Every structure is written in structure tokens, then in C-alpha cells.
Figure 1 (cartoon, rainbow, N blue to C red):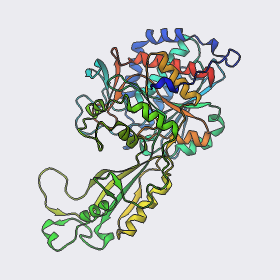
Figure 2: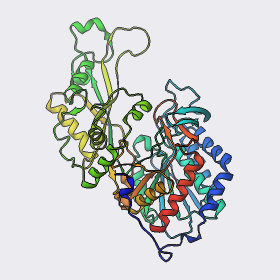
Figure 3: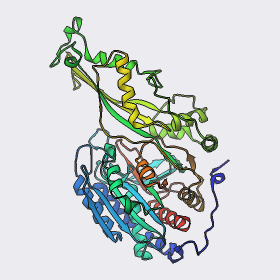
Figure 4: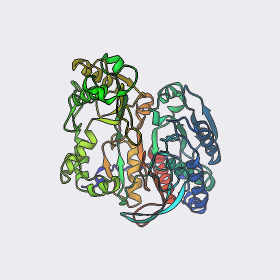
Length: 497
């Protein structure tokens, strides 16, 4: 079984659409002609800092994104103020009646962590050897997640407008600057601007969908996420140091808030965090559908588990490597409780023997159908109370996301799959991604389906040496190929959207 089994062939007549006015080949030719300008546009956007975690460069980046909207042919551009970071809105009239809402994020994670082999904000072009062969790539924070794909889509728009006059369909562009904070103001914006945004037939999230081996992966959905902070302090507990760290020799007769938090965490999971012991945590989860099981079966015949381990520098999985179906189900349908970081007391170089007065950890939960984000933190708090840890505080760090799914039968998904097939790709079709993106805002407020994907390769989001391929090889698409793919996808969807 291969991805072709999931295609629904749709042939629209000329009466059903107006895309005959769009000349795809002229747009492709413009991509080739402007290759160096397109690379420059990518590097220009990447070099602009936009760390929402640090509130660094956000307003300047929003202005730059608005300038780029205008530069590539938008008919109208607005910088929409919110209670947090601005949202950049744009519209571009197309050659058909169909409308696509393209969602982007222009914010990134911080880029000051150690381990960068090249300047994190230098957008340096480097030679790189991947499992598929040699490539040229740009190394920069945001190259993968996701200013690289944003710039590629704008390049595709630019080629359409300069080569043909218009893109193949009407475009609504929405770029937010708070995705790395949990998109706290995106739902409010979408509700407020619902009348304009509801004109869209579907939502699209541009992304480079090839692995380092060249294999394409297409995700039909995303998990939800909840992010919170747990803190144990001697003052709140009534035991241990109350206001500051004291000499560690006092552990002989004074309790430790650090050990108390560790003990509390130990009641929440078993088997190194792989089995969650919080009452009610699994109650709302629904089993895979028949469609999902069919997709998982197809995935298990082609999934390259060794390739994943090479890319992510992982030695072992939680299940045997040859249990592909089990691993895929775990990744796709497995809810998780993960400790992102934990700290307290002295953590600098050298020794300083102290008994800390407080300790903190950050935790995230990944949500699968039909878990709801508003239920999870109350479950955690109830668990702590039940086990005698009511003094440990639980603070939500961001608003989080709910999970979101689209059927493989949706016209916008079918347009994406036909575009893959037309370019010789047989993608792995995943029911759900392990990551989280706020598509639920569009699907539940606007009631429109979504898809994400494309060709090209990028990797190492949230890590040092994040990169995107610019010049590919026989298996990895180049930046120009990625842009042509996006143009072709829009043209495909314009015929059936």
C-alpha cells in the first residue's frame, strides 16, 4: 500500500473555476529568474531577530514582514495590534474565486544557547552532507521553524505576481508573533476578524516536508499542548529553608524542597515518565479511526526509524525499533507528560554546597483526540492534592493549543497529495504530527479545513545549527523547487477549492 491509495481523483471542469487565466509555467520561469533575489529575501528575514520569549526584535520583524507582503504583491497590508505581539495581515487578489488563508509565525525561539557552529543570526550558507548527499544550506534560528517556509511562500507569491500578474487563487495572509508563547492572542484576533477571514476555503501552513533522506512526510493533524510550571518552596511548604539557601550540612536536620518536588514528580508517572499515573489523564482519549489505522499500516511499511535516530542523535526508542506500528501509534496517539527543565539552588561552575529554599520545573503535556487543554492542569492540581502535595504551585505559562485534525479526503489535502504525486513524490501520510501548531483556531472558529506541507528540507528546530536547504540534490528539493511546489499546490487547489 502506498500514498496513492489515499488520493481521490477530482477533475474540475472549466465552468467550476477560473484558474485557466493562471499560467503556471510563467510563474515557474520567474522563480528560476529570481533565484538569487529569493535567497536574499530569505536571508533578510532570517537575520532579523524575533525572539518572542525575550521580546527581542518583534516589532521590527512585524514591520519587515509587512514590507515583504507589499514587496511580493499584496493589495493591502495591515499591522494589527493585539494585547501582545502584532499580527501581520495581507490580502492578494488571485485569478480564481477560490481563497486560501496562509498562516505563518514570524517569532522564533531564543538563539543564545551553546553549540552553534555558525553565527545563529548570520544566515550563513554552508556545505552540508546529509544521508541523501551533499547540499547547500542556510544556518540560522528560524530557518526551519518557520521563517524559512514563510519566506519561501512569499517568494512563490512574488513569482506569481511578477510572472503572471496574480497568484492562482485569492490569498489571505496571517502572520503572528506569539506562536512560541502559545498564541495567546490569535484566537481573539480570529474571532474579531472572522468576517474577513471566513472568506477562505481552507488554511495552509507552508512547511518543508522532506526528511534528510529525501523521503516526504505529510501530516494531517497536530497534537495539542499545555505548558505549565511547578514550584516547591520552603516558605509555602512550611518546612526546609524559608527565604534563602542555607549550608548543605543542614540537610541532616532540615527538609529539602528540591527532594519534595522530585518526590511529587515521581508520583505522576512510572517507567521513566512513559506511563502517566494521574487519575483521569487518559479518560477522554479516543482510539484511532479506520482511516487512521489504514494510514498507520501504510506508514509501517516504509518508515525509516534509523534515519530518524541519525538526524535527532537518539540511540534507542521506548519500544523495539522493529515494532514500527507500535512506535507510530505511540508517536501519533501517545499523550505525554514531559519535564522540559528543572532547576534550584546553585547551578554554576565549581562547587557551592547549599540546601535550596525553592525549586522549579517546567512541564508540557501533548494532547491527542479527544483530550482538552482546559482539563489538564486541573487534573494535575487534583493529583497533587490527593497525594499530599497541595503546597506545590502549578502555574500555566501559556494558553496552550487544542489538537486539530483534517481528513485525508478534504479537498485541500487532496490538492496537496496530487501535487506530491505530480512531482514524483510518494509521501508518508501521518494522521497526526507530534508537534503543536494552533490550527484549531481556524478549524473551530472559522470552520475551515487545513493542510500543511511542501517539499524541501530543514531541521533542528529549537536546537543549535537550525538549517534549511537552499541547493538540494537528486533526492532533496532546492529552494526554487519548494517555491514551484507551493505555486503548483495553489493552482491545484484553486481548481477544486
